[in-house]
Amino acid sequence: ELVAIDSGPGMADLALSSADGHSTTGTLGIGLGAIARQSSWFDGYSLPGRGTVLTVQVWDGPVPGPDWAGALARPITGEQVSGDGYAVRVVDGRRQVLVCDGLGHGPLAAAATGAALAAFRAAPAGSPSTVVQHLHRAMSHTRGAALAVAEPDPVSGLLRYAGLGNIAAMIVAAGERRRGLVSLPGIAGHQRPSVREYDYPFPAGATLVMHSDGVTDRWDLADYPGLAGRAPLLAAATLLRDAGIRRDDACVLVARAEP
Image (cartoon, rainbow, N blue to C red; front, top):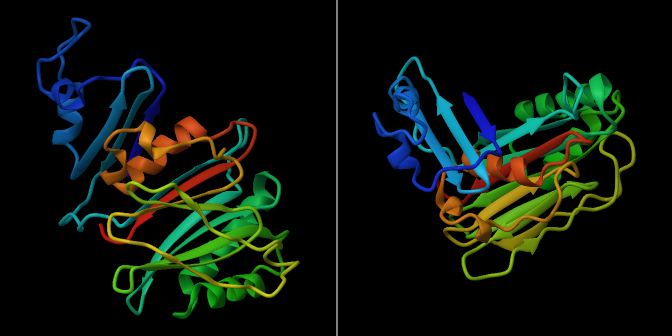
């Protein structure tokens, strides 16, 4: 899986720019078309004056169905590893996502987040609050982290959520103001108050956006026409480009009730 991001002049019509032979600078005009032909899955989003994001997957077998969640993380400028991370899982029919921000930066922060991701993937099926408690116990040997677990349920039309520390999470639905989700103070692995789980309406077509404090909250999906209905990875990468800050690790996750 490859993600390419720029903050260049952007393209008014990405489909036209992907057509072989089309060029605005006198080149052969075959670059984007060649990428698409060599990919199992290819998607992109571009706005004039904002830049372009391209996402590519190459599979050695049949391409899986559309993803219901996607995310991207990057380290603070000058660092090789990121203390921010994410994981996605489906266990016993329950779709769950995790965003984790290990305390500080560098290898020790990355180790804390790595422990959380491993414990999340291996955890037995359970509610978000149960999973958060499991992660807290599994991270006692690390410096700790802020983290949150969300479970979108398309059958009930609800999103279940539990978090510790400053992981931001919002539900964005058409025609409504985005709704912030509640996380409790604490440090997973060290300082844990009673974990509480909250249920929120999550109608068809709604989008969940979760991010670490390396991403500002000064973003609005309405500023990106059509992005809310595109692949979650593409949306996450676009928000990370525009709202991420370089003086901290950063992570954005986007999930939907249905692919």
